[in-house]
Image (cartoon, rainbow, N blue to C red; front, side, top):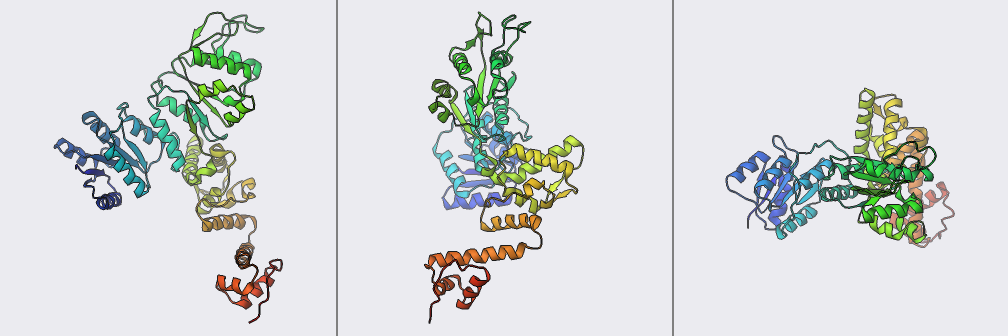
Length: 470
């Protein structure tokens, strides 16, 4: 069996792969650079599977990928990177990568991927074009990596896509990414929010009108479908589209042509339609508010964007990006979030999602007094919010609550949190023992006198228990 090649300038990554492959009795060979791996390829050596980092000194993993796919198109290449941005994923898939593996990765997951690549004949397609690695959409959370993979797999498709996600999650960014990485990228991308345009104007906005079609129509006007000819039309908040326009949209998707308002000649529509909504369209169909046949037309491929509270681990990365962006726009030095501020933000729910975080970073760039932003520098309305349960464990949650209280209740933090902590432990132990204090004390590892004193100090008399003798 030919070996699996690992190409990475990071010695620790090579070591992890080598140990994992050795445990599986899979032969391997390691390289510290893409140049070194290319030299081995030109020397007649070939791997069974090639696993390469994307960013290394000298030639990049994408250059190695393009070289391999030119000469050996059936060779599976797994691209891995610590830079978990959309363009990295799309560039990998468009270059013909078998899979995209973001760092840090789970070793078992990585080995499953290698075994699958060994066993399967990969499907390779895609252009060998160089794509800028400037991040377009950021995210290291697994849920965002799934979105990146989906965009990469759709990069050569013309399929209709429905994007689901709460307001502020970046649905239009995803639609633009789908367009920018599609065969239609040289043609227009036209976006329209169907909920933001009055019902009586929306038909003309979408399909255009002929001169004299209605009062005020002094000249012929091209609608958004014509403006997007050959490209992509993004219809945001499609769930709010009026029923009569749902019928017209269905006809365009079915027949490939439409009529301008007041027109009698059909206009051909060569447009890829991408739609988005924060609503549950299945529920709106059930309630008779959305046409079922249109729903099925739009729901060819569905992407779900996670809310920010579902990807809290991305908050530091996003905040750093938005602070740098705001600083560049304003011509000032970028500010930095202190650890306490980061932890506090990671405990908030952010109902406005990524858009709310971006607006916050712009506010901090203008209003925060120093270069290092502390939790106390956050807007008052955020400091007053109670942090949600932490994204990792109870220690993180406690840390976030401490950060909040240091701002909101200075001088009282230790006493309040200590009393709450001890009270919670004693209450749970008493529940576990049915109120028997000696047993509860034994469970907690404290003495009988201690638990009695603490119950009195903490006013836990409502936690009824027996004063056992003996």
